[in-house]
Image (cartoon, rainbow, N blue to C red; front, side):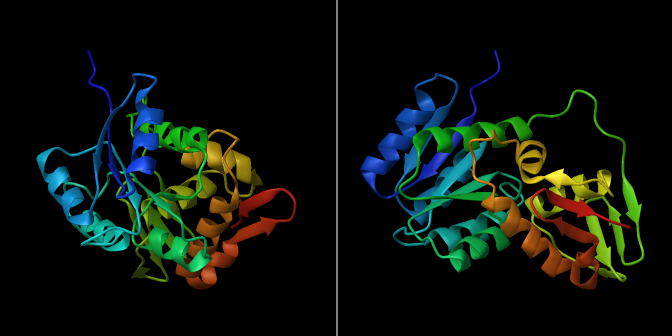
Length: 231
C-alpha cells in the first residue's frame, strides 16, 4: 500500500495546531506531525522529509520566514511545498513569504475546509503525471525559457523565479495569445478548487512581471477576464 502523505505542522499555539491536525487526519488520508518552534521544525525534517509543511510565521527561536529560507536552501527540502499560516494580513508580509520560496499563504483566522483543500491541492501537484509533457522551450524577443531545464533568462540574463512563478509562466506560455481566467490558473497551476480566493494569482502575476522587467509587458491583464501571454 502507498504510505499516507506526511504533513509537518509548525505552530506554537496548541489549539490551532490541534485543529489543523484534526482537520487533516480525520479523513484518514494524511499523517500529521506537530512541532512548536522553528528549530524543532529543522530537526524534524532531517529525520524524515515531509510531503507538505504548514508553517506559522510567529515562532519561538527561529521565525517562520527564517525557517522557510533555510528549508529552501537545503537540497532535501528545496522542493517540499510550504504553506504559510499567519495572522499578519499586510501584503508586504505575504509577498516576502512568496519571494523566499513559500508556495502559498493562509491568514488567521482561517477556514479548516480551505486549508485542507490547499493541502490536497499541493499533494495532487506533487504526483507524477501518467504521461509526462514533452520538453518545452520558448524563445521570444526578450525571454528564453527552457521549461524542461527549469531555466529562464531575460535579454540574456538568468532570472530566479519561485516554483509557483515558474509554473505560472510556463502555463501562460503554453497557452500564449489565449485569455486565461484566474479560476483556470488556480485550477491548473495551483490545483485548487474554486472555493479558494483568486487574490493569490494577482500577487504572483505582479511579482512575475517585476522579475521579467520589460518582458513583463507580454503578460497582459484582460479586465474582467484574466491574463494573456502575448508574443
